[in-house]
Image 1 (cartoon, rainbow, N blue to C red):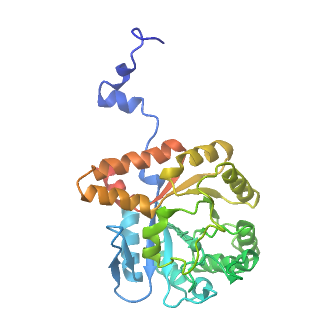
Image 2 (image 1 turned 90 degrees about the vertical axis):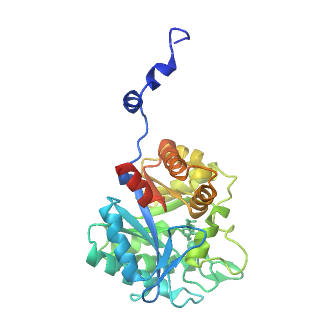
Image 3 (image 1 turned 120 degrees about the horizontal axis):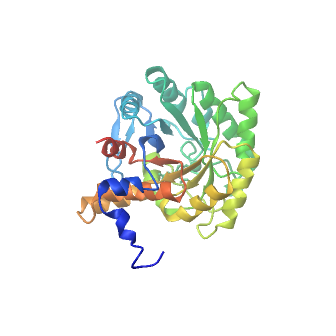
Length: 324
Ligand code: PBG
Ligand code: ZN
């Protein structure tokens, strides 16, 4: 295959030819839409750094869940903003907690939509860390008990998948064990297996009101400089019977998505996080980029890197563009 006999441009001459040789496709089936459920009535607070995304009370969440379902998006992932926070994050595993009530409301109105719940403590603790604090750091093994209780409580409320995002060691096994012991052996665990200590989470922490009140998350989330460590993290979660593996954030970690896809046989999820969304929105608002095209190009790159599923705040707009 040498020029001038071989000419690569021959397969790019028109749109149908390009369609025939396209290697990666983006579909509404790939998307999971995140939503923030807030305590209260008739609340719909815009998140300034995330245009189009809101903290919403349950009736608005249910209405948006129906819209998401009608757009053909298969799943949502829920984050909760409770009325009260305390050192042990009790709302997280209360039957009347914000997520438990939200899950029941969505499943009553839009039963076929797959409801995934984020399992973590940071939205529920007054200190904003992802677990119980002892001696100034998160106590891993104490936190496992709370995470297991939270996951069980979400399953009891009707969650279809639980997604631990805390980065404690042993959480997938702890959650699997409590689910199996309580009649929920059919509920999958979507593990945030490889989650980096990233500055890209900034806008989310405003949305979920989950900024740590002291220190940072570097004693439990991964160092962005590390790759081999990601393989160890993923291998542990596979051993602990995770059903999905996730890489988070996505855009700056496409190499890790590719590496994990090649090494492991589980469905691969990536989280196109808040800061990635905000950057596109901000640049588009300034007229510096074509927001729709950059969005689709970015999501396609995540698929090309090896993601099977993408958690993305763009899900609704991307679904509309793909169908129109
Ligand atoms: C909670 C959690 C975070 C995100 C998802 N679950 C934030 C964090 O770890 O600080 C980030 C999502 C986003 O930025 O869109 N553990
Ligand atoms: Zn957390």
